[in-house]
Image (cartoon, rainbow, N blue to C red; front, top):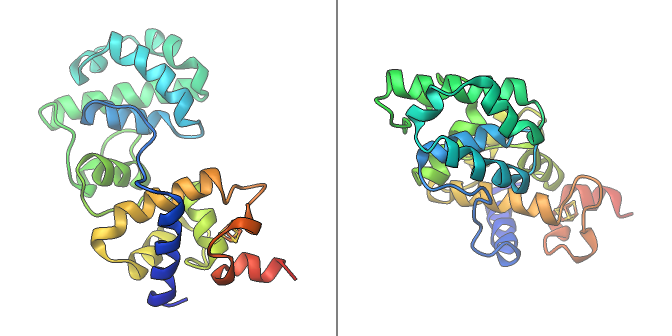
Length: 211
Ligand code: SF4
């Protein structure tokens, strides 16, 4: 892999994933960070159904900070891991109210201090919500990056660093969304659509498995 090949891969993937967008519904930073926390191990579609109800009941971060955990659990139950997720989103809301004056911070170091927020969630908030350069590496981004050969590590931080090495800072947020959606719809975990893939000639996985 080198920067020229990496760029050509991204250019071709952009022809398939045109204008990539976050598939979580949100209206403000509070809703975005809560939706991203809830999306762990769950589809965005399902999260959107639940958050519609959740944000109707708790329209502000202050409302969620004061919520009764059992009421929250009853709403988010369809998402799985509901005990932990309910605890985390209420604690996160409390952190934002108590330490950030009700505003979601726009800084990685501060974001990862919030309950339930790891580097991946923080990167999504920065890139999607604040339009800042960040690459969130989730299971799709990691799988696709490793298959293609953009990364050679299952460690998400290593993959993030390698992607940041290949691509220009101004493209980081879109590189994330493009790889994520390509992984979600084309280079899927169990049935990658290699036959019609525009980058198969440069893909490590294809070249190793097509013979
Ligand atoms: S060739 Fe196959 S494995 Fe490689 S990126 Fe395309 S779909 Fe994924």
